[in-house]
Image (cartoon, rainbow, N blue to C red; front, side, top):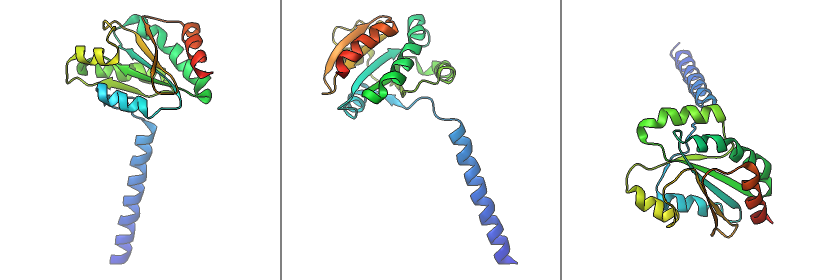
Length: 170
């Protein structure tokens, strides 16, 4: 009897483990993590050989929310040609429920990160682009060589993004 009990408990444990894995797979993590300027530079470097569009946004920023679907469409349309879109939320830590809700509603086909709360915001801004005044939305395009190719400040349409991306994908 003891062997059967152990076997049943082991089988039950495996089933519970699998059920837990299924639950976590059903609810994917919407934010891929936190990044500071160095972490973002390393993340962009991993995409070398691809065109990378990094978009800085926030849930409180109406133009950011309006252009977000264009970024998702851009990723879906041009991923196979070598485009990687990366989103970086600049929302404060206390606003993460709003970020999670926004991402759950939009289900973007690209990873989104949160700017680390630690550190000086101005240092982060200057590391991204010394001419960036901190306005949102703000996007930076990197060529296949990993070097910054273009800065897009303010809200842009799908057609504007596509024109810039297609030029770099050639």
